[in-house]
Each structure stands twice: as C-alpha cells, then as structure tokens.
Image 1 (tube, rainbow, N blue to C red):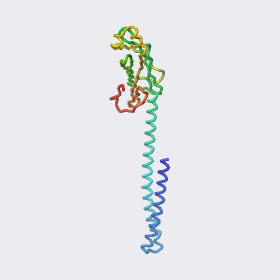
Image 2 (cartoon, rainbow, N blue to C red):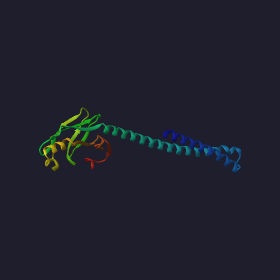
Image 3 (tube, rainbow, N blue to C red):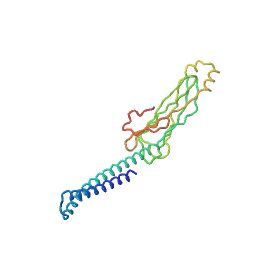
Length: 224
C-alpha cells in the first residue's frame, strides 16, 4: 500500500511539473513578445527543466523505495529471529513432596526443547519451588546452564533432590495439626529461561511464558 501511494505521489508530481513547465513556457513566450519561431526554444528550455525535475522526483522515489525495502527486510529478519526464540521452551516435572520430620524434599526433572533448525547457546533455566503451608511461604531456587542446546528431541536432566526446612509452625505442631497443615498446603514450580541465539541476541521467557527480547547483552536476564 505504501509502495503504491509513493508511486502515485511521484507520478502526480511529475505530471504537475510538466504542466507547470508547459504553462510557464507559453507565458514566457507571450510575455516576451517573441516571434512564433522562438516558441520551440521556450519549450526546449521547459523540457530541460522538466527533465531535471523528473530526475529529482525519480531519485526521491528510488530513495523512498529503498527505505521501504530495507525496513521490510529488517521486519522479516526480526520475525525470523522471534520465530526461533518462540520455539525454545523449558519446563519441569515435580516429583511427590516428601514431608519428613524437619524437611520437605522432592525431585525435579528438567526439560529443555529446541524445536528450531538452529542451536541456541548459554541456555540458563531457573527453577523456583514454592510451598505454602501454615501461612508460611517456603522457597527453594536452583538453576542449570546448558552451554548449547542443539535442535531435536527434548533434553532431559534429573535434578538432585530439593530440600526445604519445615517452618516452626509445623515443627512445633502436634501430630494431628501437622497432618492438617500438610493436607492444606499448596505448591508450585516457577521456571524462567534465558538463552542466546545464533545472531548473538539474548532472549528471556518469564515464568508466565512471556517472551522478552531481543537484548544486546545478557545483563539482567536472571530470574524474574
């Protein structure tokens, strides 16, 4: 649409320029009182000027077209980069929570997938285990860095057990109170991901799944 609008403006300017030049030639010839034989010279001068104007208009059109094409190619490259970044994902599988006398333990299996045709680098996966029990929020964070994740099947790694100390409200509770607190507890795992693509651009996927980037450096790309 922009290309057509630009062409239409250029054609309009050129036509108006020719009309103005022809009118100016006739007016100049009439005003000067020159013989009719000189009319051809007036038109020749006007044609020269019109050619110059047309050349200027053509140059402006070419510059505009080049700018539009450059912007289009940049948008295409950006779309391709984002398309790759959107196909990098990570998630976890949380094992059963084991409530011991003093600690809550579990195992977390980490999954990373690169569903593109290109590798990604310096992939960092941050994991935050959150347990809410007895009005207390317990947290345990961990992370894993993969130097490179090639295209293909899911990369899976079983993490060591996570262990969180019980809050005092549970440690000091009776057996029945303890059982009730554990039954009413809730838990969730938050996962964030950052990585570098083949163009040395950095991306981050937040725990809510929102893709952010690209960034020029990895500064500030830790868990959020």
